[in-house]
Image 1 (cartoon, rainbow, N blue to C red):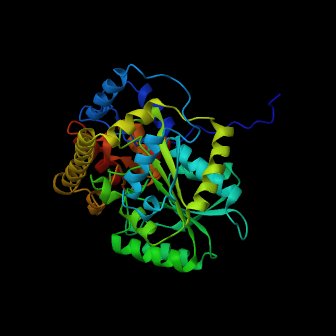
Image 2: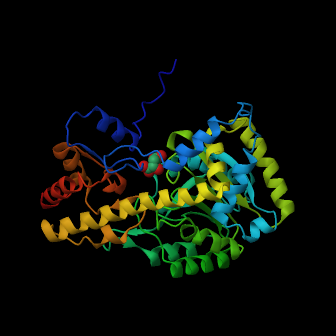
Image 3: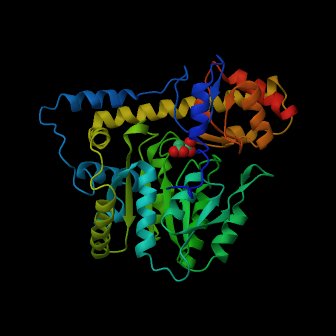
Length: 404
Ligand code: LMR
């Protein structure tokens, strides 16, 4: 048995975490996985999550019964408001369909499965992904029989957005194509369209009747402001672009292992929404039956309690602010202290948790092998892995790697 099963390579992101953990070098640095760390390289349990956990544990009525198939209603309703805005036409007109999922990955999977079964495909089942994108996107769509295609997104020459390439593909794609767009804080490049560019993207999407599959895993991390980071999604909903949104609370609530997320599908009418919800329930039932309760209860508490919500916003600003401070310090070290060859403005222009440094796979490998600094071979670094104690060590070694 199983002689024909080929050996698969380990996951490129989580293999770095394992290698970092196994490394005994004292100055080792993990810039691989996108997970927030504090100034001591430690995971950060958000103070608001500590408070919400206490509230939950003190609730004498708390049980471990099954949640409804589509999740905790207080959670899904509040999560929809967080991303769509409480005055969103989709919410006011009761046509936002929200289902609790196994974090953002589960939302992507459920959304992909739903499209695979129910989208009116005119031709082969295909989705356009940004080049590059989160590697898991490719696997998630392939798993449900949707072929991933790519649209130009990042231009290595300018280390910035290839806007004309992006719009060119939106224009040349067959009408009613499906495009995956990162709602904010693009993973892995840290390069987002400007509001003006988003408007132009929406114009072409509307003209071509494309379907938008938004992935929003970093709301709050782009600007430190939850509303600002939801701007593109809300703009597209206002313009009646047919779309769905995948939402994760892994990063912005620091609930990585709790797997808290939601899928929001926005059909044009309440009647269509009811039908969509019924089918999502059927799919969810066969896959996970009911989503897990603990993390969803925590997020429901912080989204619906006004004091907790304010505190959460402050925690997000703390995380986003520390990352921005690290961008500035890295930029300063490279340009003013080490005079590293090349331009480094992109370090401060990029946003969110990630930075595409622009270094090549050999230089990335040299950082791992010679300096015990773990990063993706694409040159992506998680800025959240830098802190006041290791940023100089990283800059110094990046300088060496660039000089060869
Ligand atoms: C990442 O890109 O590092 C994160 O989204 C974690 C993951 O699941 O890959």
